[in-house]
Structures are given as C-alpha cells and as structure tokens.
Amino acid sequence: MLITKADGEKESFDPAKLEHSLALSGASSTMRAKVLAHVMHELKDGMMTEEIYRRAFEILRREEVTPVAARYSIKRAVFALGPSGFPFEQFLAEVFRGHGWKAQTGVALNGRCAPHEVDVLAEKNGKRIGIEAKFHNDPGGKTDIKDALYVHARYEDLRNTPEASSRVDEGWLVTNTRFTRNAIRYAQCSGLSLVGWDYPRTRNLLTLIEEARVHPLTCLTTLTETEKRRFLDQKIVLCKDMGAPHLLKEFGVKPERVAGVVQEAKQLCGV
Image (cartoon, rainbow, N blue to C red):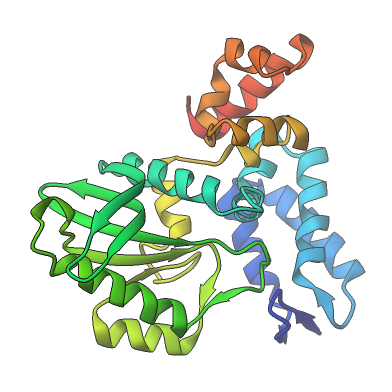
C-alpha cells in the first residue's frame, strides 16, 4: 500500500515507523496496537501521511493519558508557531539556551563587506555561532541549495570581519523541515552546518528539542488556538511557561481550565 508524503512523494506504508513514533510519544503497547489496528483498517492507497497522523492523534488525545498526544504532536506544534518565522526564531533561541548556550535573536552585526541581521546568535565556551532560521509553513517545504549558498556567504563575511564584536566562528542553517540533496551536498563540501527536523541522524532538531525538554506551547491540547496565538504574539513560546497559573489567568484562560493546562504542561515539560 502506497502513502503520499507531505512533499508529494509516495512510499510504502511501514507500520513499524508509525509504531516507533507512537513509542517515542510514550504511548503504551496496548494503545500502540489499537492505533495501528485503526489506521490499518482505514488505510487507502495514496492516503496522505498527514491524514494518518490526524487519526492517530485523535485516538491518543481521546484515550491515552494527557501528555502522550501532546508529545506525539511536536512536529505539528512547531509548524503551528507560524505563519511568520519570528516565533520559530524565539523558539530556537530557547532550544539552544536549554543546551547551555547564551542566545539572542535579531542581532545586527557588521561583516567584512556588508551589515547583516542574524536570526539567532549563540555563544558558549568562547565559541560563537550565527544561526539562520528557515521556517516553512508547509510540511512538504524543503530548504534548498539557494538558501545554503546564501547563508554560507553571509557567515563567511561575518567570520572574516575585522570587528571582533561581530565575528562568528560558524554559520548554521536550521529548518523545521528537510533539506534537498544538493543543499546537503553543498553544506558538506563547504563546511556549513545544517540542522533539519530529522537531519543529521543524530543532533537533529527533534533530538535537540527532546534532550533540552524545551517544547513549544503549541503542543498543548488543553489550550485553544486563540489562546496559543495570544501567547505567541507576546513572544511567549514555551510549554514550561504554562506551568504558571497566574500567567494563564492573565492571558484569559478561564479559571476552571487552568489546572488542566498546568497539569499537561508539567507532565510534558517537567515544569
């Protein structure tokens, strides 16, 4: 049975991949078997992977313990940081802080040849990296070689600037989706560091998020979309911030729902 990926490519449906993603979310073996049986029963040739995700998510949200559905939805939750890329930049800075980096967003630096605004500037142990955040609203969107060329040129300019306060040691290109083969090939040849949702195999964006236990508040199933947007508009992007009852009330979450949001945030983010 062939299914259709977000970028339009088709591949054979692999039950093991679905079970693996369910296991990573913390779903019990009984629940994994139930979701797999449901999906297999309704599977049709050409079905979109997004539809398979929605069906699995609804079962988890309805029948599994609170944080499992939220954890399963992390990838979609990062997409929900859009439509602009600004909350994604804020979120990336928080992920790097979770790994011990000092991080700032929207930093103006002067290169050897031109001025640049760096999406995220991260510093640790005397090392400075400039990060270009490439956000896609479309799950099928890919970051291509044009972006890699552009980012490499920017950070070569900053790496060679005579101004020590503007100098960076490395340039990174980070995206919430994937890279084209040519972008990866160019980056490997030129020394540009790439981080995508599942690239490289280790230390990709998903593992960075999980290891730092830094989850976007858009994961939470107990907040409405309007409430999530209200927080994002005020540059509040983290699930762990939802552990503060006074903040939830301040942003209009009804008192009778506050405890449920706090509980889910604590279980998912360990706040």
